[in-house]
Image (cartoon, rainbow, N blue to C red; front, side, top):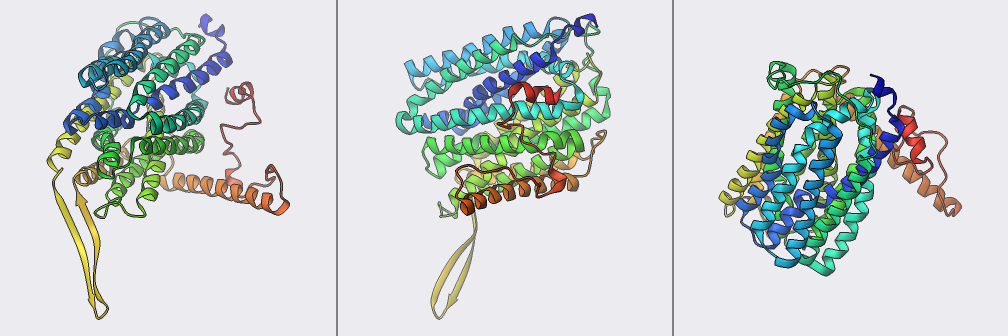
Amino acid sequence: MEKERDIDLNRSLRNLLMDGIASQIMFSLVTVSIVSSYLASVNADPFIIGLVAAIPFLSQLIQLPSAIFAEKYSRKKISLLTNFVSRFSLLLIGVTLLISGSSILSFIILFATYHLFKETSAVAWSSWMRDLIPAHVRGEFYSKRVAYGKLVALFVVLVFTFIFNFLRDVAFSLVFIVAFAAGMTSLYFIRGIDDIEVERKGNRNLKEPLKNSNFLKLTLALSIWKFASEMALPFFSVYIIAILKYPVWVVIALTSVSQLSSTYFLRISGRIMDKFGNKPVAILSFISFSIAAFIFTFTTMPGKHPLTPLLLIVIYVLDGFYSAVPGIAFMNMIAKITHRGSSASYYAINNVMASMFAAVGSISGGFIASAFLSANFAVKIDIESSLGFIEIPAVHLAGYDFLFIISALISLMAAKLLRFFGEDGESSEEVVKEEIKHAVLYDVQTIMTHMHLLKLFNLDKPHAVNTPLHPSLSSFESPLQPEKGLEESIKELT
């Protein structure tokens, strides 16, 4: 305990915040959308795309043996060493793509290396952060950290939208080189985070989490959702490129929409999770994925139509919610049901089970996509009158549409299962929905009010509205407040 008194929490959280910005840039450039877009650009088979999409989850099996020594040795040193090897693989991918072009085999090997070493550090990192970040601000701090990162990463992704428009396939190599540079910057800031000595060391019992029924309910719900989401997610970008015939830069632009949406929803959800519980927010994110997958089936009727771009924007706005919130929510829920210095085995079991289901989901998605590639189902409404004959396509399902519908239905089942998990201090989903709705309406009203003031008084800059338009939301301040310095933001949390 003496060592903990020497820890500079403010400095550690400040470095953790900066690490979040750099690492989020890296993660935003190595997403399933970009990887699937690359494979689609080199005409890879859907089964190969599903197999590659399963690599991040299959590699998480390494977390089981890593949990044995995650709290036995320095968690900081484990994180630094394994992440260095992982991120160096990104540089090799970029150089290989630049030299050999479309070498799918070398890409798969290096991509697997990146994820294998990345996941080796995951349990040590999660356990380290669980002991470092104070419980009463954990949800808000994680949300702020990811939100800062996604906001900066948004601009990087937007830059690559233009790069892909001009350089096309050559830009893929640049993506991985820039991701490597961001990853190295992240490691620099991780070095400035204080290590926390585990209070009780020794071999961890991996059977202990399996005896906790509440934990098993949580893990089962997440695992089924990962199966459902990873069944469809790798094929979102493939669908946009192969079926809708949009260029790669459109996928990158839609990814930037997701980044912006994610930043916004993290701003709202962080304090909601701390105040009303993590479970209802996670359930709503599961449901939002189901809605997004279902909307994809309406982007063709049977071809592109005038509403297709709008539907894609709605899908990727929802993507910003369900791609960012569950990870934070589940980390917080596990932290609530574990004790200090004993969380590594719980994180390992949860991550490995979820990753196995996700890997099977990705591979199953490849099989289903291949099987239904030529399938077609249509329902049309025929209207015949004195004015003539009109044929209206009411429903049209083809190819990937069947995959998206199956995925959406399984995701709804996962949301149902998550309701059986018991979380201390949780509120109802209706309360959380109202809070999110009020927060969104408050922000929209504030923007409209500012725009009205600009127009009315012909001002160059908007002035702050003194009285909140919705009093219950006065606590929902943005984690990205420009008037506050980084030091003030950290002190506010700690």
